[in-house]
Length: 237
Image 1 (cartoon, rainbow, N blue to C red):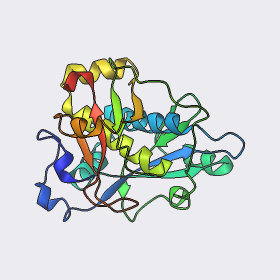
Image 2: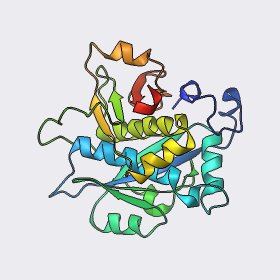
Image 3: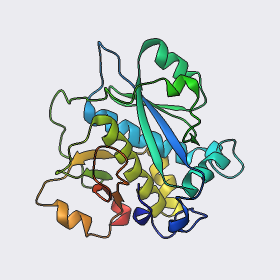
Image 4: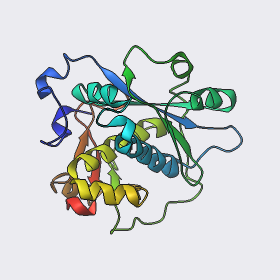
């Protein structure tokens, strides 16, 4: 995620131009994909977004919590997220590591505290990034306009893993944009949200609406600076 997509009050300690010089960290997410019962794509995207929010809201990631320093170091550099897949024994080994598992309708996603870019735990480093091309068994229902919606760019073709990371970025920007009591209300409600592909005719207006916009750094799949997600939280409209 590029620096310019972060709000002015986000918890960075470095200026935007310095974040490339800071030690780089990554937020690992692992999605469970069993051969016999893969999750639906939209459910996986929504579950990944909620997993990021659960970590950001967790007491271990704030104040003097055991993950807080790693989270601060991660936010002080570029905000990287990487999604890997696991099944069977791989998933059980991932579950044994410190983290948070979030369950959707069919998806399970485990998020872990940030790690150095080149310092992944071996049980996560061995997991595959590719192979997260998921499908929806049926088209997702229309999003509830009274609830948060993470709108995906209709012109970009992204793998499910890439889209999960981008949805996580969008959820994080929405979280940063909220006041304390608004964050608490969202958390207490269980972080309801939807991830949907924006109608083509609506996308230009969304990107210029003043809502948080994710601009990808271009490390994988898509061109640098591409707008991938608009975070449409009712409290931010």
